[in-house]
Length: 289
Image (cartoon, rainbow, N blue to C red; front, side):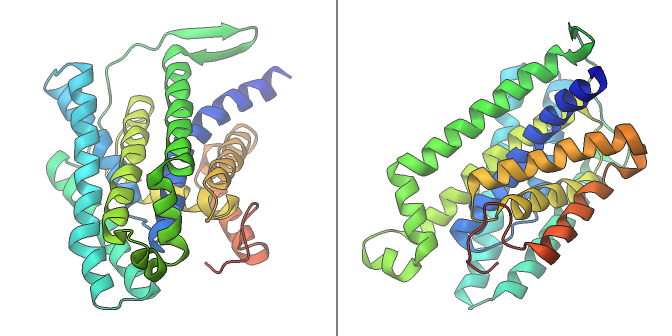
């Protein structure tokens, strides 16, 4: 029983990390019809920005977080303005956006590699272990999990109950009608990328604090975010969170019982299963992907 509880504890923490990325991917697809796989590079870039300021330069924690958030927001903004909006003006379709986002993902990984090198970057922090019976979790994990829950709740409220959320849903349903009704759809897309990048920044910081930062991890984070969104239902913000929990808990169970070599394989296996048998996802609609 203790093993099962430990798997659940570890899985919940990972699931919340993946949910920060998956919810951003789902939100951007719902708003812009773009599978923003470069979201993984934005998240990892924020993690490196945080490490550089906090660990390398010795900046205060708050200053390092603000710098990482600003870096992610700027990256998301530039990707949209310089690439996606240009493609939209030229009438690009799904394949054009897919090629662009893959190119941005590789470009982001390349920039990180050029700036920080191939060696792993870690934080010199001593973990404080909290024991709940036979189950253990670090104080850092508990704090970061609570922060993740708060961020996801705030983001859900912002998109569901605010004026921006209504404008976003109108843009997602029909851009032409939204424009006629006075919605500045380009501004909505711009804000969507900035807001989603804030979630990516949180994911990158959390990932950096718990795992070694590696330039090659951008693609892995992108896959986990994409898989969580697809499994839960790419049109559903809550579905993306649920899909991330499916991945996180399955991953931890696989690692515990089958070995660490299955860590990344779980997401791919689940993604293929859902794409083959239920492409709309668990909470998906009948809208086409």
